[in-house]
Length: 416
Image (cartoon, rainbow, N blue to C red):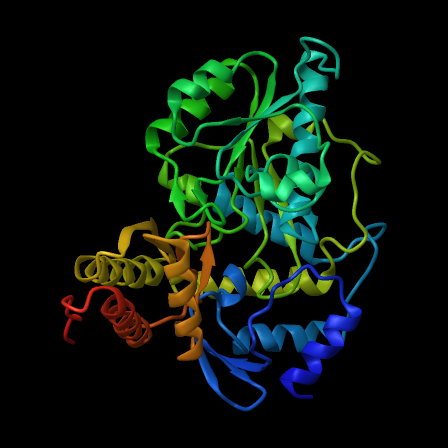
């Protein structure tokens, strides 16, 4: 089918939830994807942080083929060999004790909110009455997903307003504002949850001071600290989890995106002191933690460790950061460069410019995306190499130079 045929078919049959880019993808290999005409694109987004090992990685494709011949799905009424093994592997990497497997990151976050409320009732007699322990604190700029609970803790009004009234009991704290956090934290709070590096919010790491304050206050008020690692987890920032940069240990951790190498799988990791508040019948899932997805996730973790991928992410992420900072020195339209590992963003002076740069980069065969209106986000596959970084930075330099030339002819592009 042609791109036009697919667009027409979808416009007539699909719910209008996505504003897709005008590219019909056909296959992927390594750090590249190819459209239906065979044109190659360097993917600096990896399916929004999902394809950590790129496309058609042999370890992943072999595992999918092998497991598909054995067992794709069972209900959670039965055992299979992979859930326990995957929980043990994730626990070793995260410092957590138990796991609940879901289909997606939003479901993992929903699970965390339910556990937080259940724990409060178990330990403090929390109820939905006055002065009960049921409030949840989230951060400005936060994005946790589009299900009702996740949406309630997602900050931007444009996401929440069409579906109001939302889940009650959620309050937003100013980003990196310790004083505001302290003002709003008391014994009525059952949990505070946030991304240690905000993704949709514009690649914004929390400050060490804020992270330490959140941990301290959660202990003081017997509340749970929830780390949303759906985008930042499993190596993306150069450590297994972003919270490990801050020296704190959460009570609950949510993860998803890269976990099963492109297959749908999320997880909630739970500390032992919290796990006792959940018993059979309180929560569940039909598809979460199936044998195919869990087998692939085990292979992904094994490959990341075997190939010493964290060391590579730190090195290549540092190189990409340096190159983006070099672009900032040459192009005044870039106001900030921030992030860690291979989770980086460059903030531009206007949303219009960000749209223009993104569009031109796509036309030239480079996939980025625009988040928080003015930020170009970089979430490349972990297997990216120096030559790929050089290619995307070189093209960005040209595109920025062209954009600046239209508004300020005296500005010269940086030579390479």
